[in-house]
Image 1: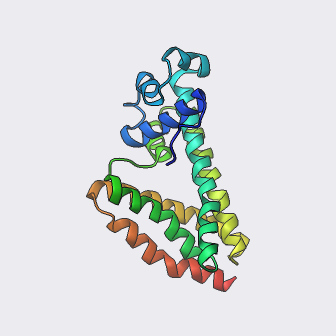
Image 2: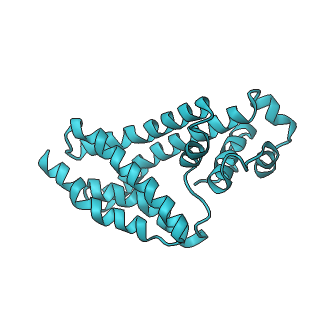
Length: 201
């Protein structure tokens, strides 16, 4: 995920919260740690986030969903430079950002939206709704991309959900095993299904 050097103090704190949640989880991410990570005065947290940690977590989750959604256009642009984008190529690009991160930095981080969902879905309706919105924000551009590649619109949304679900599950397994096997497996196994949907359309 990108750095935060060009962001304002509020944006830096949202970004920092997302980074800490993806590494440590929601419960272990404190407001003090967020301020320190963002290089912001602790007093500014109350100013920018009067709703406290719940508000900050919700905004961090929302930021993560928007970030993932924007990455779709970037992946498509990269694929277009080397040929015609395909559903399997898009999915491989989505997964590759994780395999590259894990190979470079180890398996210490995951998806902040998944972390917030796992910890808070049963106890915090606001965070659960923020996570659901984040997943929808990510799913929509994936589905639109699939439609542009020839997947019937009626099936594109369900395949986008499948792609994100497979990626999130593979991230969990990769972190547990400290190995990228699950990530490469979902790419290989889903490729024929995804490209077949485009060909059938």
